[in-house]
Image (cartoon, rainbow over all chains, first blue to last red):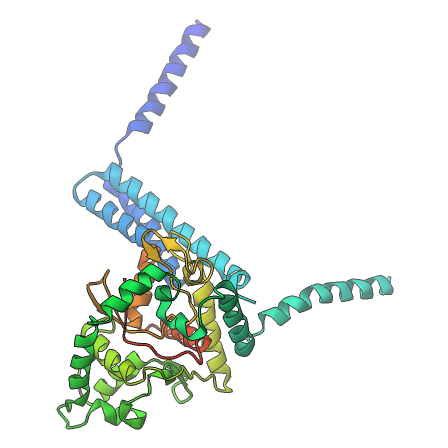
Length: 104
Length: 280
């Protein structure tokens, strides 16, 4: 009896997890991802260090969302956020690192 | 205990002091180091020939350039610029009224630091300031009319040595340093600085192009570039450099672009103006 209950619970957990993993992204998911990406890109802009690839990926995310493909839109927005954060990290690192390249 | 602390303090000071000295802004020392670097790296290139960029270090390219220069593709821009320069604005004044020596033979003095406004004034910016002061709309900074006007003005300065001054004004020194910082700062997804190509890799190929040395790099501006199929200004060159490393360019004539032009032009002091020029 206990064993049957354990199998049932395991199956239920697996079913919930699988459903969650394959659940389609929504417009709300996209908006949240876009807001995070745009906030990071604005920070990169304040450092005068935006990347063209970030801008292109943001554009692609909005285009996918406009076409109703929220899975792609969310993926692209998250990718744009990662790119923007990388450009911020680059700018911060270069605030000091540039001096090492100067001809002396 | 006190002795140990004193020794520690001296040790820390000794560690910090050289860094501070190296970080101090010293344009004269930078100028010497910059020039030494390139003349040692390219011992067979005559100093004044650095203004010819890739043509100074590749015999094949030089041969093609000399052939092209029999009928220079920038000639149309010089002619157009000359006409534009002489044509009065609606108020009857001309460009010549905005510049020393009526604008003839003065390219080598740009950019300069304007102590009144506290900023670097490039020739492109001065031309648009002149237009606006006379009730005319400013031109695009990257090509067409601006390239023609600067082509004509450069032509009247050919052979005159760059003479960029850094006045005894902390703001001028700050502008110089900001330009230097911009030049050496890596940016864009490709993580390149201006120096990555034009210092560390000068004379090497990037795909089919030979990278020009930073020494004298602005002397031939504006240029007719085959890649552009037309003329382009210094602003255009900076914007496309940033785009090529996947960085979002600054607006043309942004303060930082003017500062980097100030820095690079100072590094070329004494080298002759060779503009307008041609590049692959």
